[in-house]
Image (cartoon, rainbow, N blue to C red; front, side, top):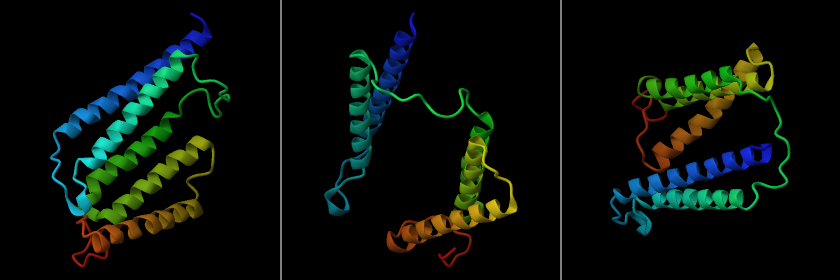
Length: 170
């Protein structure tokens, strides 16, 4: 098998994978009730939109792969092999966020998730990550992102998110 055939086979596999995920989302969206809520849009609207988008993208990827593959692609940048420690950092951030969100609240758990994910991405890029100044910058940035999101959801959209205090502001 030539290198080009291998690339096309991988591209077809990716397209079929995206198509299957889209169809699986559609199968799940069937089970969601369609009663219209606020503004005439029901709870099944977004799942159907995502399912349709993924199914369309999967079909287009398969079509493109079968008609010659992805053309005029630049060579990928970065390392030839995956940097697994970065996956560990990002995964740790997501898992700790899920485990701690009800204990330390949305803002702090999302800040921790952000900090750990940034540590992994910086290390994967070869940037200095564990310097105290970088850690403080990541902490502040995480807080500046998660606090407004928390307040927007709780105060403006009236969606309950776990907080650290009962006041609803942290």
